[in-house]
Length: 290
Ligand code: ATR
Image (cartoon, protein in one colour):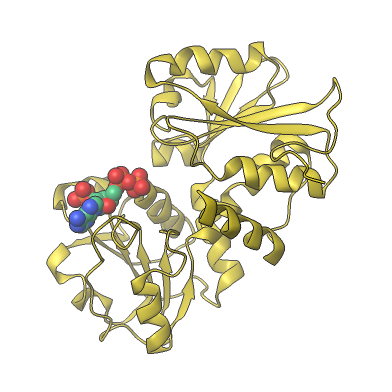
């Protein structure tokens, strides 16, 4: 029997409700992800897609507590816009300048946080032997995803983060915001910047389906380095394949998506859910359908 995606098997009048706000929101994988966990843990709850037009963000946010929602995820293009409507914002969300998770507190006030950095770090911990050490890291890109990744790397104590972005001024702004460990390198020097690094992270859209390829030569990358791509369509991007061919460990972008959802699910539904091979398989199946 087909069980509806995004809900436990049978809702009561006491069901806890959460959702994801985006525009458009129909490609979001979050309803499948949270829906899987709700079923797996037999929780009386639901997680629904919330298509919120940019002009109605404030109304939607105010509606969360009015409707008795436990909270919501926030995705493109609202992650920055919702900040001003929060009653309290976590230090992570402040540093990243964006909210991806909202919790509605018992008094109806709104707490905004950002779990993207957590998801990034947990996906590396779970998927590789990389641990923060003396080696430098190279991060490509300076958009929203890069802010979360670089902040997380600074927080775990990576002493040197070489940041390369096509538009240098965006990398400069991020470096100024996140401090000393971040050093800007020229986009054209990205291949040479790989010497003596332990970690390479692509946060640009390059290599994603319908986007240009990421042009980079891995010759100078040490063979014990770990390569992470936050792009997950396709699952194995050309740079990940090149890293595998070279003998490096790799971490797929899907891991960050799966792990960033854990703290939110725990806050709303009271279980720290597990990222399993079965869940990964289910999400990959829905990637094929989307
Ligand atoms: P996200 O929030 O997912 O990080 P974003 O803020 O739009 O998305 O950032 C996209 C990143 O991909 C940026 O670093 C962007 O570089 P610019 O800051 O120079 O725009 C990078 N990017 C997109 N297209 C690119 C291209 N053709 N060549 C190089 N970098 C590109």
